[in-house]
Image (cartoon, rainbow, N blue to C red):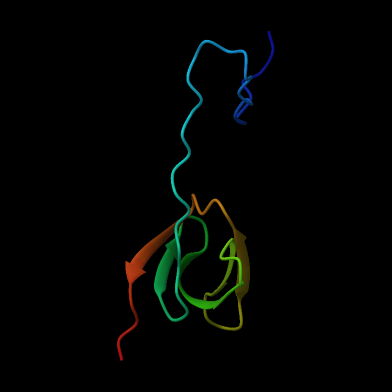
Length: 81
């Protein structure tokens, strides 16, 4: 028995089934507070120009680059002014 593949399969143009519609890409702003499933609470340090990669500061000098799709990243709102 083959193990389950966690990847999505590509849609063939000749398929009688509709293609899966992907969710729109989340956008983040510098200073926004976020929660990462594995790393915990952090703040957006930088957003690349195309918006597909963000750099998160988790404190104590820990920076993490997260690429789209942002499945493990959740927004907690804007930073307090």
